[in-house]
Length: 439
Image 1 (spheres, rainbow, N blue to C red):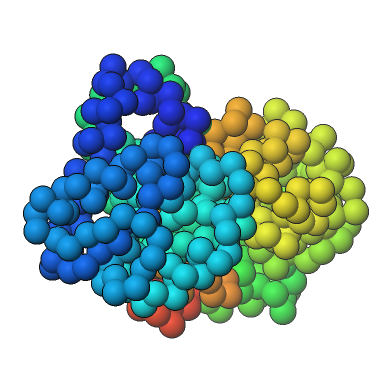
Image 2: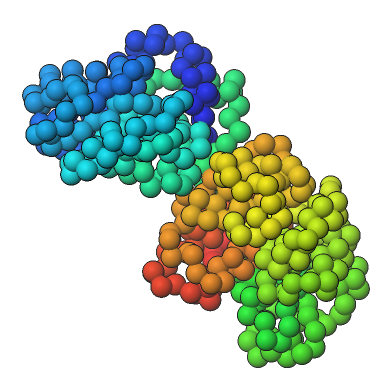
């Protein structure tokens, strides 16, 4: 159930369901009413109903609650209410939601249950249209929408419930949704006959002697994510620092051209504290020309800020994953500064030819064919220095083991979040890298 349906997709699902609209509305309203009584004891409730199907759902909710003994009224006067059911506007809102109405509902000091989405929230983008209701519980139907899990929509929905209203799963074959919520991946199998070379050889490019920590985080994460071998490439001075910290990770001062002539070294990560400038740009070009899969992070991206097209031309047709946060993204895609996050990431993938991991509390993984996956399992304490270096190493390891760039990106982001979720708040990147479990 990880498919995400836009409001247009959901309208299509309703049409393809074979069920009369009146039946869908009746079932939806009853599902909402059941979720309400599951959580709250009977109390004075106001159901605020707007036009269209969302308001019709609300009328059904009011009818069921009354039948079950609740004191309920329909309207927008919330005096005396101890619970508000928000049935004003659904996911396909086409105009701004009034700030005064949102303020009244949000300031009522009572639980708010929203139908489909909190009123004012765009179900396709996760962005408010004007003001927005902040719900304690949101009940949607059949499948989640992008707006339920993209920020700030995820925070505005409260607890999200997906109710089954009888729409057959087979309608998804016709709709072919492009967007998904990231889920537990299927990782490369380790056969009984496997050995370290069959599990890939990841290369992590180091920064200078005073900037080695980021590469070690990436290398440790790559090893923990299942790469058969991991090598840090750098200057002899940098490697002297690394040698004091690593054991199972190999070190080499061979120049990158010579190193990557060994085709067993099949995945390369460049960027974590590698330095910004011509030297890093040159190494990126070497890696992209080598035939290995490439992960570009941090300084490898910023080094091309003055000429992104140079990078995009070099990427064309290559297996590449880029892992920018919003600041790095803005340096390469200067005109993609507004709009839905998943749409910006898809456009960036189309321009660059790389799979894009646009990081944040709602990390998006996007491909040039229009697919996008939104991640939801990362705790807020994952936002710590060095966590991006860990992620870059994890992606590199999965590429080394033969996963496609999109599969590797989705899997690494999920594992990254899952690892952090099992660590306490205050977790450091060193703890994160050591805690990675590729299973």
